[in-house]
Length: 344
Image 1 (cartoon, one colour):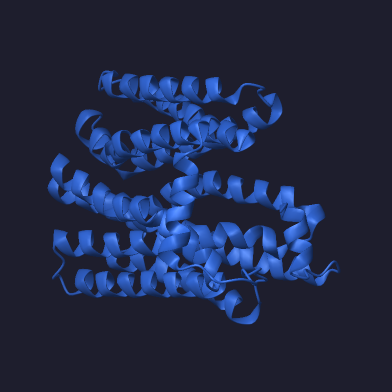
Image 2 (cartoon, rainbow, N blue to C red):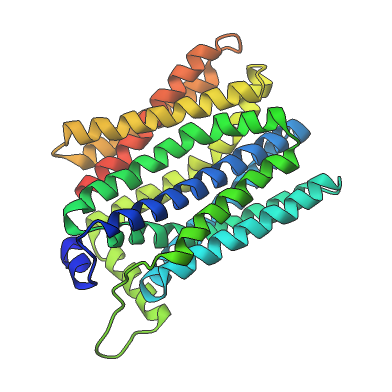
């Protein structure tokens, strides 16, 4: 069933009311996403500034990424079976409570590393459920004629989040105690929840016949991926990249501080321009529309890994060159998944 047909079947309005609902919910989720990214930036910088330890940052990276990577398929299954609106509300609420715990610990001076790791892991679990629910909800909030644009807006939001979160995080650290900086995430989480309390998100639940169990549906999805050769190879490639490459991004603050002698402002510059590179990569794919996307995916990943290595090899007095290589890495990194999206 196409997205256009699905949207018609759940009775989406074609009048102006859908615009108010879409933009209100979309804006709330965008703010929530920016708040989450800002929080991760703040916490990673705090760990870098406090410990200067590679192992501490690696542990933080595992806590922030591994639960989400492992549970994302389950999150997608739950988003198809249960209310996506409630999944997003619960995920945002639990993430906000995690931040309230950390704020209290920071303000009372009782914070320890394991506290940050635990809260980052819980938030990662919540993101595994919130992400699929939010992505699936976007196309259900608009009529068929706006689905492509809505999907494009959702993709662009991922890049714009990276652009905004790092500078805002650096600014927050510079003007207020870290505990209050984390309070921004609580505010944005509330702003993400409030629209969901007033607007319904249409959802086409499976009906008719015997309803399959949760585990059966999950296993069916895994089997479909595994027995489709091209799809299986792509997922294996993405899994290797996620496990081997993505965790190294958490070491960027330490690289900037120890190797280039930079501060939080330089980290924010590097991460902010990284978002610009991701946005540029997505736009290039949209303009070029490559006919053989698999080769572009492989080329993009190879170029991204090479640029990452060159960033680390730049002498400490040439931070500008490192920024340039990092932006190229981000551009290639974004272009590869965009090609994948055009293929699938």
